[in-house]
Length: 218
Image 1 (cartoon, one colour):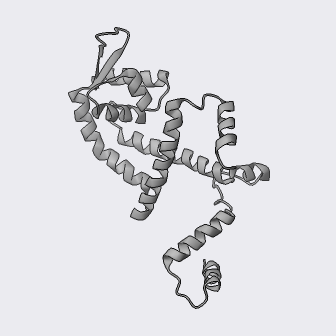
Image 2 (image 1 turned 90 degrees about the vertical axis):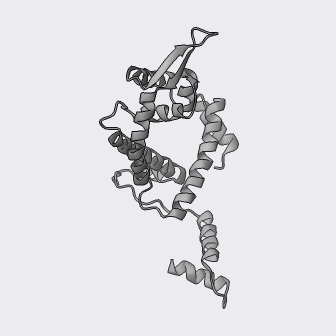
């Protein structure tokens, strides 16, 4: 950091350097060449080629996303102990239903970002626990509509307290500006991926490869 400050001072001799100027300078240096990622505590040092691939910037970010997802699921499961909710998907499905008068099963599974089989199992558990009610569509008996019950609402409100603690645990010791920056970046990624999820643009390995080659920076 001291070396970087000295480099900026050499570029602007005799001028007082502000934090904003230094931040811009630092980002410009980062764009020129990303430094090596922090060493992963789970990895050994037995295969340098594997480590080189793992520490590529995009791969490293992807791996950290996976780890964060697993930590979050672990905390959520703790928060759901002693409730009829078994998985994080049970909670999110019930929370989505709380914000709608009713949904079809297909709509809920889509909003909950699940495959049909696993989504159907979540709905089955919620109905069995009397947290969700279902009825046939008046115009299409094959279609089922579902809604949260009073028991489901009561449970969800009680769970919200513990889930607030989960949110605080996930964001750890980040400062408010850091949280706002993270929220902005995650929302940007959410918008990107949700668009592809809804349009079903990535249905195979070749779709993934072709989209990256045609649309994303190398």
